[in-house]
Image (cartoon, rainbow, N blue to C red; front, side, top):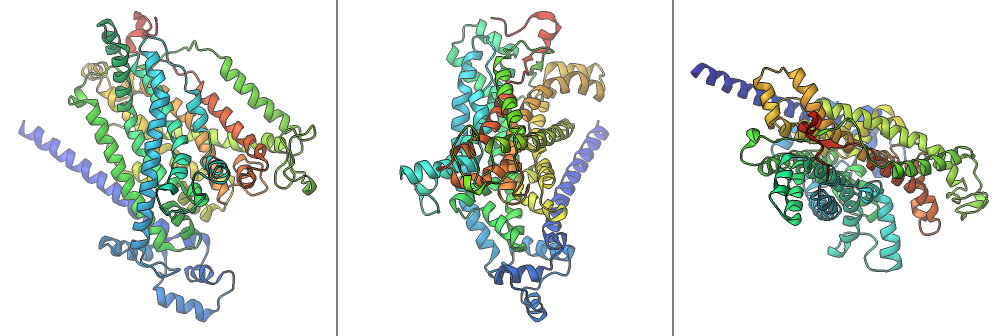
Length: 594
């Protein structure tokens, strides 16, 4: 007994040591990566600093030498990373290479702004998500299958920077109900929080509806219903059980809001972490970028740990011995195909009609023209046909987003299904990194372009899927049938094929489909900030970036790609992923029967 206990303690200590080594290696690797930005781009750090200070004027060798001496610039990326990490351990983040201000003060002030904005946006997202998911829980109390959240899917596909531009144009400029930009009081918080929180709330509602659908197939629901529980009581229990699955995702969404609000911060001129990191990265002000990355990393780890802790608290005191019976996907789906067919026809019709038109013809005499027989959706700021741009842009936009989503789904399932309890780690660190920062690094190595933007999006898109898989897998491992299979001698391969994959693949695949529009928006956002496809590309993000300034004058130039993304979201929402318990699969009857 003593030897077994000692071996268990040694194994736990070894596991903890490996986890800390992986964590330290991830942080150190990020430090080296940030420090290597000038060398990746082929720039001299001193030249980058002088360019930021003096504009495009070519500096002389004496000025470069003076800057190197003044700032003690590192001779290489490894030396720069070690130098910065040694100071960061003592709380010294150095000084800005551009204006000489202390980095710690700059980053702390920006973190307070981003935390306030992200917190209010997360509150907006939670309210929107719960309001949209409540009808699904109410429907599930009767034994009927909840309908897909089409409103939630449409909100998920809404670009944050387009919503921000609409709010600025309508609410701030036309109605004069809020400031247009700046950060000087509570009134400046409302519109940015809505622009960030409403689309995130749509994604949260999609996750909640999927969780409600799976939860309603669990046996305890039938027991409660047979015992005469009221619909309101059962609906509350369903939502609470669904929130248990989604809580880790909320932490992921909050961290993403904190670091990924660059476009919204740019439009509203908010001095947050994302905007400061972008400007510092473009100016090669490495100490500021390193400070932002360090703070976002710490926030990501803290949020990931908090999400795991709350998930275990909601799961119950029994923990891994809870004896849950999660739902698994059925082999067939009997939903109504009318809505997805209509959305597919509308999207396909618009794309085909656009592909038959010339997307490259520029007519400056027809700039921002309204709809006509020649141009059904009008023209863009340089006179190109919007319908043609919509059709030709569908291939790079949708195709790239789908490819990134497939890769992210496979990576998320593979990483999330690994054995062991959920813990914070590299995934939480990577999730904390703004896609813009990843885009800067990838653009430095590969150059700006659609392929670089897609690669940057794929490096972070797998993290939410892995967290979702990890949460579901932990509940499956706590189920009675999984533990019984283990006691009967089932091996890891059998457990993976027959229990884990069937239980988690459906909800996670639907989550991945829900993120196709969001992935397209991530790529579009990189294009909006000049890190994606070129300005002459028909990619939808580039179209939005070029036309969003003229929203009030030519709304169809923006509504075209937005409608395409919305239809894509409807298709993702209507994709069949039905869930029933294991017992129902073995012939005891469908729990969705009235």
